[in-house]
Image 1: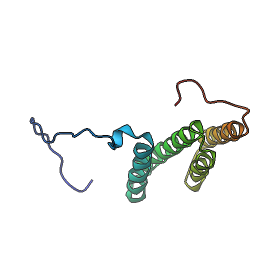
Image 2: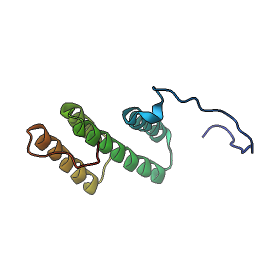
Image 3: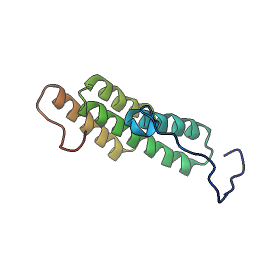
Length: 119
């Protein structure tokens, strides 16, 4: 946003793989995505771009909530879902988050199990 971008047709960096890589940790990836897009949205002047960033944030918070619920962290899941309502959202997004919150509660009282492959 604040500098020019160019392309160089050479290796600019090497990636070191280790056990604490961010890309191996979904929680870190989702948290970093939420933080970076929140900062970007807060400085964005274009209303259409802000709307796209808000949709992204609802989706990432919903993904984070599902991840926590699937791993038995029900209070964290509900907290993530609740944070969605602190920003602009559409009716379909709100309904999706409410369904996800209901899913989390049902999982907490052992009336629902996560889908196979979601962990």
